[in-house]
Image (cartoon, rainbow, N blue to C red; front, side, top):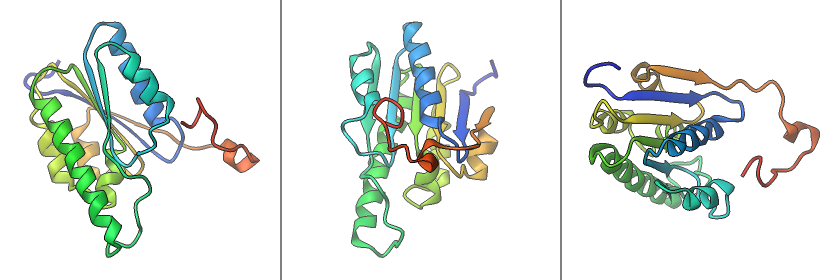
Length: 177
């Protein structure tokens, strides 16, 4: 263990499996009796399998801090609401990181929250620096910014070789949500 630094893991890339990998870490940690906190930036669908499963898992807390698809145009009045929701989510993640009550904190879809200007990279990095050395931070999302990649000690890039959508498979319960 590096002295005075948390473990930071990042799952990025255009392939499927970033959130799934992070949730696998939550399942593993929970199995060891560790407490986990998950903030889902961007995501807003209250009917996902991970919400249902995490709410049943002892020691796991999950919060959706997104409003769904982000408007491309930053002048769209809805964009400010997305920014506000993401910033509230970051406050919750920062509190979970800093209070010492959680062993593992997942910031799901934090990378696109940064690249789409809902959050600043600096604010995310500052939040991570609040963690003690015993905390594991997991970040996910496409287009991970360089600062988050540099901060992480473990980075995995999921690469799409092919996806069922291309063959006509619709989003499937238990697979995509």
